[in-house]
Image 1 (cartoon, rainbow, N blue to C red):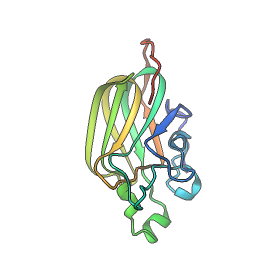
Image 2 (cartoon, rainbow, N blue to C red):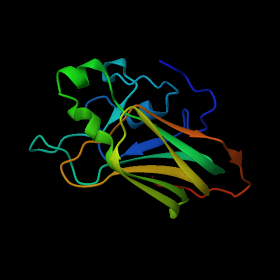
Image 3 (cartoon, helix red, strand yellow):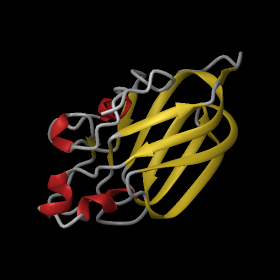
Length: 165
């Protein structure tokens, strides 16, 4: 397990569209890149009433100030339980993903990745914003994030508004 002391997202307020058991949104910004779900460092959205995922589940972090965003790095679940017992299916919880930088509630830049994030992936941005949102596109989806790092930063002097993320 690695700890990233340079992530501006670490410990910031988070929300997600739903929560599976105790896999709170805040786990994805705890500073630990532990990819094992049992390590209590991964967030996860919930199943619906039929035992499948939901439509377009999302996760967001409020950075509380505006920053120049150059890199957003997502860490996927890749623990032994995922690979051996679930046949790697939980790795698809970061497949066909959209990463957005927002300034308050306005989208500044969007990157869509149609592939699967195997272990981790860096998304390169040239944007200024105070919110990062990750959406898993499609129906019957479960979004699991084991860490979200916001790196290569410079704080801006734009005053943030109250956000309902």
